[in-house]
Image 1 (tube, helix red, strand yellow):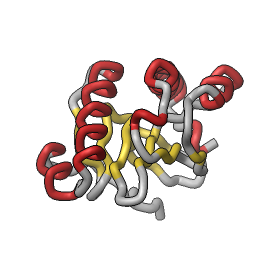
Image 2: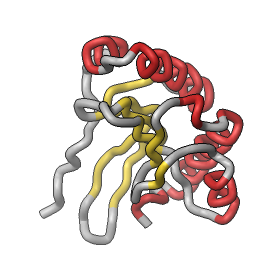
Image 3: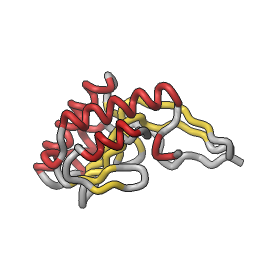
Length: 145
């Protein structure tokens, strides 16, 4: 039997989430700036995915194991300790982009950073656009390879 995806799109309003969840004024400002940028880059309105992830656009995936579901293409979460950024596409060019991104830590499926000013926004844009292109062409996320 196929597993149900834990993180699904919800009806929660993004602005309400930020005002109720984010306790730092700087993190709120960074969140609203990221929303503006990701909306511009993706062409889609922000939506809540699960209780804490803000995502832009979606795609359907299905694995050989039978696991399938819908996921956001790019997004972020303004977690208490740091931001989690969901925008990583595979490929040599993107590895080079990540090296130029700024001050962050790399996780298995996301990039962690403290504040938006730690990142190079031009590089972030290229990384987000590469992720959107990769998922639209392959219907898979690089983090699941």
